[in-house]
Image (cartoon, rainbow, N blue to C red):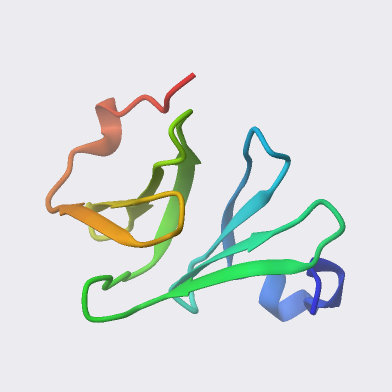
Length: 104
């Protein structure tokens, strides 16, 4: 599957798209409660869905830093931190992201 294969209805579910330093593309799929990582050609590399540790209500923003840490902001005012292999590290609940600045 590739990004080009996503139909019009599915594209309505996308809330944020971010391109990291490796030119990988991260997509917040709000309604399906998942994060999708694709390469520059649109091939899906990774799909991060809810699990015992991750409980997305609707991811709305994503960013990474130079160490590869992934930051996911959720509609429920939580911030999830994942390592570069997309493994859960930490959840900050009731996070006031109105003051949050993504890393340069």
